Image (cartoon, rainbow, N blue to C red; front, side):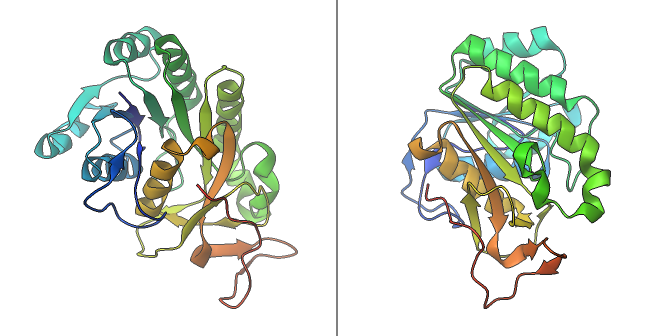
Length: 260
């Protein structure tokens, strides 16, 4: 079974960026999404349901639970910062995969100490022997700092420091993982989301649905095991050196696309 905390997916189906279609081959017996009350988490749950995957949503507030009743999705309220509570719940659920999207803050309020919640989810996953943990991080974390325009770096720095620490803790945990770094999220309809291993020259936004589809591909991809990827929309790319400017439609994408 897999669980998504905040958003995540566990099947391979069609091309990256396409909406789920009828006959999708389920790759996981279930997915738990942590942070399912966020915009990305809700999109991930919807995507998983469309792919006929078993999904369990984890939310932090009781008020967020009702939205999943109409979808017939099992939902649990959990305080990710309470270590014993998280370990107990994940142990009982016995997931195959955890997708952690808590603390994603480009389009939502940053919660204090989401690093602690991420640590608890990693420890719970190790304790439950999950097959993989997918972590939604942010462009600018870790070795991708140079990808972020300096004009916004100071504002984002506290969040990026927490994301960097969370990435490092996951890598050193011994769990199989996929880290997906993304830029600002929006709901504008585009259909060109891609992932790359590049850590610079690829700053830009991505749609919520596009990121959810990419997460789906990552969860079911052996090639995405133990790698760190950047998720962007090629129509939203910005060149950040020597100055910030939009990528022109006729310019090539400045990185190699990672094939899931």
